[in-house]
Image (cartoon, rainbow over all chains, first blue to last red; front, top):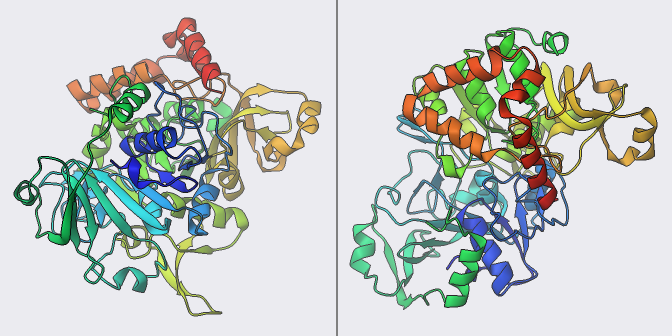
Length: 243
Length: 289
C-alpha cells in the first residue's frame, strides 16, 4: 500500500525494513525510474531479490548503486530539497504525525525504555518534501502526544513546524495495517482517509489513543494484487520484513 | 597494534569510523579494550556491537550517536537498554546528519555549521544544538557545534607506508573524522606500494599527513563487513544476540573473554571464526559488488 504512494521519476529517502521493501516494490511494479536514496550513503541501488538489506549501510543496500557519496553528503541532497519523498516507520506516533524512536518515559537521561534512536529519521522527517509513515496500527503506538519528538511531523499543529525553522516538508500520509491517514489542512490533526477492506471506523478508533478526524469521503483501499504479493515474496523470501 | 592503541588515553573522546556493522575498526576497538581504558566517550554515527563491548567492559561513560542496536532482525539492543536506562552510560543522541555536520565542521576548522535539520524536535535539548539567525536574511537555522575527537579509529581497504588511505565503496564519514581528530589511528586490509596510490590518487580519501599510526590488519573489521571484501557475519550476530537474550550482559562478559582478552593477536582472534567462515563471507561480498 505504501509503495503505491510513490510516483515514477521521483526520489525517495527510504528507511530500512518495510519502507525499503515498499520502495523496491514500487521500483519493480510501476516506478522503474524511482531513485532510492539510503542513509548509509547510497543513491539509486537495485535491491537484489532475496538479499534484502538488514541495515542502511551494507553491500546489500548498495547493490548496483548509481552513486556512493558518503553519509553527510547524502543527507545534504535532502537539505538542498532534492528528495521528493521520505519513507519511514516509527515506534510511537501522535495526532500531529510526530514520531518517537528515542525514549519512553519523561526523563531523557533516565528513560523507562531506551529505544535505538533517530538514525536518519529526524533528517528524513525534517528535510524531505513529503513524508510518508508506514507502521502497524496499535493503540500503544498511536498516542495523543509522543513522550519525545524524535522526528517532527506538524509538531503542535498548524504553523509550529515552519516557526521552528523547518521551511518545507511535513507528513502527508500515514499508511497503517488498518488504512491510510492524512492530516486536516487547517489543524494538521490526523484524519481517516481510506480504510482497508473489511476495516470499520470503530476498529480504527479502538486502536487509536487519540480522537481521529474523518475525511468527508472515506474511501476503501484496493487490496494488494497477486502480482504485488509475488514481487514482495520474491524480494523477501525469508519473510524478514513481510512478517 | 599495541603501540598504536596505546595512544588512546583514559577519558579521551574516541571516534570510530565506518557505520554500524560496516568497516568498523574492530581490531583497534579490540586492542583499546585489551588495554582496559576507562572513562572514554565513544562517538559513532550508528553504533553496533563495538558500543556494547565498550559499555560492558566499563570503557565508556558516554556515547554520542544517532542510533544504537545491531539491526532490525535482532531488535533493540538489550545492552544499551540496561546501561542507559540504569544511567551507567549516558547516550547523547544527535540526528544522523547533525552528527555528520559536527564532524564536518571540525574537519573544516570552523566552530559550528548552520543546518535545517533537527529543528523543532526534542533532540535539540539533548546535545545542546542552538539556533542562529542568518545574518543576511534573518532566517532561523540550527547551529551544530564542531566535534573534535582526541582519537579517530579507522579501518580502510588500502594504504601506502606513508599512511595515504583509500576506501572502496561507501566512504561513510571517515574522511571528515580523520580531519577532525587530533590523533588518527588506521588499520588497513592491505599495505600497497607508494606507486599504486599515485596511480589512482582520486581514490585517496585520507592523506598520509593526517595519519599517526598505520597497521596492516586483514579482516580488520570482522565479523563486521568491509565493502567488496567480506560481508558481515549475520550468523555470528545471531549467536551473540541469542546468548544476550538468554543471559543478558553476562553473555557479553563471556564474549569479551573469548574474543577480546584471550586471543593474544588478531590472527588468533580470526582463528576462532575459522578460515571456512571467512572464505564464505568473502564469496558473499563478491556476489554483491
